[in-house]
Image (spheres, rainbow, N blue to C red):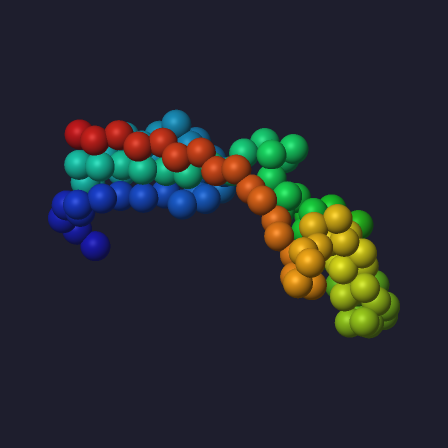
Length: 106
């Protein structure tokens, strides 16, 4: 892709690039408005619960083996247990997260 854009956005991207400080100036070369979002600190984001329940099971090595051996029912039960504090009266779950938006126009 070449040429200019009206807006350049970086949604949940900054934590995944080696040098996030370079991203705004690089994006500004493509468009006049640059906007990016980052999640709040762990204590500001309920989504951390998904990481807490799955963190004992590494994505590689024995993690998948253990999850398969335990079975979908056991994994589901563990996830639901960790989500219990976030349960709504209707039976769903509500996770609240803080996001910060940074924007600049050229």
